[in-house]
Length: 573
Ligand code: FES
Image 1 (spheres, rainbow, N blue to C red):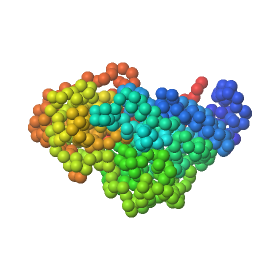
Image 2: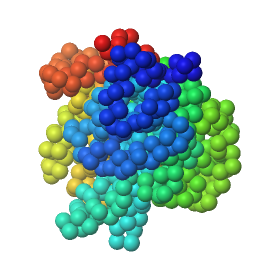
Image 3: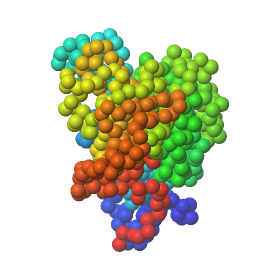
């Protein structure tokens, strides 16, 4: 009995009183034998499966595989659903619901008789949301990333899901793509189960959790349909039972050093800009303070080692065959805190020290990187008092230092309405400024920062321009795009005061983003500024608008920062 008392689930299943009977009896309608309630670690399999989240469509089967592993190791698996966020389907933006899904995860874990957690994740937000929620409870937790789709193939070419759709306007305008062409392309870039197979946000998140030590080694890159992914799921099921016995909780893995490793490894793989906002939110849930500037100081000088779209040429399947993240971790050893413990109980250095590189074109050695100093740069200046970011590896070198005349769009609808107007005063030197797409303003900070260029400029051969917004950019996109401007326009940041015709200077090397308008003129404009009407007056969206923090803080809800542990103060009576 003493041993059983150590398990959290004992408080539900271990007692012989009325409530012990109630907790066990109803569950037994699913056919569990007596011994399942007699001291077996209870493992919650937190499933983001949903047919409305196509990238996670295979996770229902994966839960069964994880259960096999849990049972083999002497645990009692219980699967439960949480809100799933389908990037390509949900409106107006999955980011609006990331925090809601995290609350669902947190409360579902805490309220139930669980000793350890397996998070089944895939599509972009399903990883950070569930990790954030789990952090606020802090039980032993392991992540099983669902894995990328097989490489996209279209007319003999390798094409990346996510990245290719940003070219559709260009293909239609310049290469006269027809509806049939588009239909053929659609299925060609989605050939199998799994998430986007570029180094977009989902792949970035999978690499992030492996870098943090939250997965078994090598888990991130295995394609969803590869048999080895199933083996990984089963082994994760076995391991979480041991983690419960070892009391290896999330906070023991998620140390400050682990976050620093993740920042450096994200730079080395060329991960999405969304990494910043999600990692910051996760850190604040587990009690590690990360400044926005640290993403630059720790990551920007790290060389790019992984040749994947959108920064490079290959796709996640190629990354896996080349050896995956373990190769990058081994190559990066001198930059990392090798002693960080991971979920298998070994350090990150021990796990990855013998990881052969099978293709140096896909993963370059540290001595011969694809690009030097390719991590994300954090900008400061009067246009972004609390910071803004840019991904230099996805930007045009010729635009990294640029001064141009602003062409301002007050909202994304305004942009769509006017961008292809033949009379719009815009050329390749202009700076496109998009307002109203921040956390509060949209609300939910959609991935629209990499807005398409005007058709008339595309036809002239222009392929990139400086674009600035308070929104985010899909990890699958590229361009000279300044994102996450903080404070955002809708709460009266300087971005709100920019007018068409103002000059803006971007200087990435000097980390500057300046609106070339005098302080006196800006003060006058601020006096005349009227805050936009909030987009909702009830329900979750109102709560989100009232409580969401700015991008540089991770855009979490202010009352969700930190955690409440796994204790439940009142009983079910
Ligand atoms: Fe789900 Fe890209 S849409 S990962």
